[in-house]
Image 1 (tube, rainbow, N blue to C red):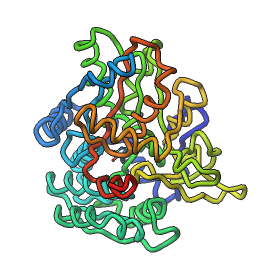
Image 2 (cartoon, helix red, strand yellow):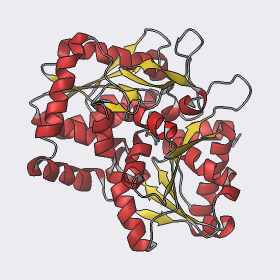
Image 3 (tube, rainbow, N blue to C red):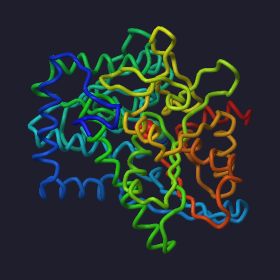
Image 4 (cartoon, protein in one colour):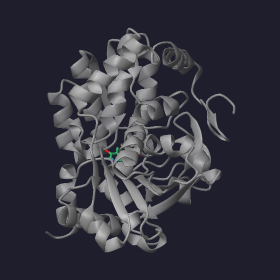
Length: 389
Ligand SMILES: *Cc1c(COP(=O)(O)O)cnc(C)c1O
C-alpha cells in the first residue's frame, strides 16, 4: 500500500509550508512513540488522569428483550466525558517529547477543545482552540470550560462559521506557529500522518474491549458497532478486530431527520470521493465539488467528511456502514436511560439506535459489542427540547 494511503483514500494534500511539521510528526511517531519511556508516561496518564481501563458493561434488560447479548464499552466514564481524551493526552505528550510548548486544536461542539485544553493544562502547555463562531455561540458552556482550563478560544468567522472552517483556520495558523506548536487534530482524518496517529491512540479502546470480551464472555463478539463522525472512536474500537474474520464490524453515520433533502452527516452512505482538509475521502458535496453543510442532532457527528481508513474499509467491504436518524437516536437515548441506567451521548445513541432498529438482523444468542463513546449529560437540553420533557 502507498504510504499514507488506505487503498485509494488518504494522502497528504496540503500547502508546501505544512509539509515540514507533518514530516516532523511522522518522524516522532517512529522515533518517540514506540519508546518505553513514552509508552510508560502515556499509560500513567491514561490510568491515573483519564480513568482507564474503562469497564465493559453487560446490559441484562436489553439483552433479554432483544434475544442477543448487548455489551457496552464505557468510554463515557473517562475524564472530560468521552473517548477524546485518549487522543489528546497521546498527542500532547508526543508534542511535549518533540520539544513543543504549545498546542492548537479545532473543535466543533467543543468536546475536542475541552479534551485538548485539559491535556495541555495537565502537561503545562499553552493551548489555543479554533472554533467556528456559530458553534461558539451554540456551545457556550464548552467555551467556558475551555477558558477555565486555561485555553484561549478563537472564534472563526469565515465560511459557514462551523467545524470545517475551524479546521481550515487551525491548519493555516499552524504554518506560522509550527516551530513551537503541535496541531492536536481531533479525529482519525486530515492529512497523513494524522489518521494513523489518532488510530494509534484510540485503539486502546478496541484492545481493552477485545481482552475484556474474551475474559468475561469467553469469546470474541460477533458484532462490533460504533458511531462514525470523523471516525476516531470507531476506528479505535474496530482496528484490533479487523483481523478477526468472524467479527462483523458496523459503523453508524448520522442520517439527520430522515426527511427528503434534510441535512445529515452520512459521508460514506451518501457522499462522493473528493479532497478536504488534506485528505482524499468520502465527502458531502454538490455537483461542482463544493462541500455541503452537514447536520445532525448530535453535534459530535456533524462533519461533512470521514476518515480515509473508513472510506477504504467501506470500499473493500470489511466494515458495513449504516445510518441512524435523529428520532431513532433519541429513542435509543431514552431506552438506555430507562432500561440500563446509563445516559449516553447522542453520538453513541446513534450506534445503539442502529442495533435497536435492526435487531432482527442480529443472530439470536450472538454477542453485540457497542462502543459507548461518551456521556449524555452535555445533551440534556437538546433531548428535553426534542422530547418535550
Ligand atoms: C466527538 C465525538 C464523536 C465523534 O467523533 P469520532 O471522531 O467519529 O469518534 C462520537 N462520540 C462522542 C461522544 C464524541 O464526543
